[in-house]
Structure formats: structure tokens, C-alpha cells
Image (tube, rainbow, N blue to C red; front, side, top):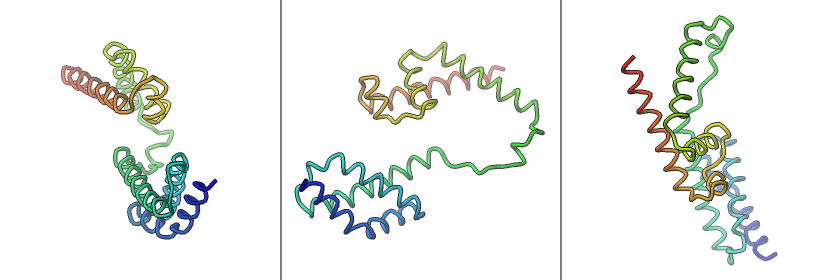
Length: 169
């Protein structure tokens, strides 16, 4: 029970400072609130290792900072795209729809013919089902770094084959 009190009291005492740190990195108060919640959940999982208030404070600041950096990195890889209502109307150009369908078919063929079963499984779990690297690693009895590498190699293979075949057409 002592660990819970130490972590919780330190986090609550530092809440406004942690929120300022998160807001400064993320630039948004709502995102900062989300980061604080995520950081506390991460710390909670390791609460038994926290022995002193000073240790709880240091870990809180470090964890909030790291969560914010992860958030920024994740969003820089997949930036938000605004809704363009004029593009999403029923008057969508049929040629564009056919072209997108053709590209999707090409990519699906490349995946089926050129990726290993493990690469296909990792790609599906990450891109289709949206699972974290850690969840995929646990599910497939792999290390998270191995999951990242497998996914990176699968993407590289798809990209190279697609670009080579589209250059020939």
C-alpha cells in the first residue's frame, strides 16, 4: 500500500508541473491531459519499484516527458489529415476510384506473393488491427524490436516491388 501512496501523492503534488511540461511539448492541453493519464498508467504498472517520494517525482517527470515524445513521434509519422468535404462527395471521380482499387489490388498481390507468413501476420496485426508493437511481440513470442524490424522489412519489400512494377507499366 505504501508504494501506491508514494506514487499517487507525488503525481498529484506534481500534476500542474507535469501538465505544463506536457503542454509545452505537445502544444495542446487536451493532449497533455491524455499524456498525464498514460504516464500514470505506465508508472502504476511499476509502482512496487518506487521506494521514495523523490524517486516517484523523478520517475513521474521522466515518464511524462517520454510519453510526450512518443506521442509527437507517433503523430509525425502519420500526420492528421483534415476533412475535405469537396473531395468526399458523391461526385467522386470514377477514374480515381478505379485507380485506387487497382493500386490496392497490386499491393495485396505483392503482400500475398512476396512476404513471409510472419511478415504478413505482423503487417496485419499492426496496420489492419492497430495493435501496439508490444502486444504483437507478446502475441507472436517475439521481442518488440524484432516486430519493428519485421514490419520495416515488409514495408520496404512492398515499396520496392510496387515501385519497380509501376515503373515498368
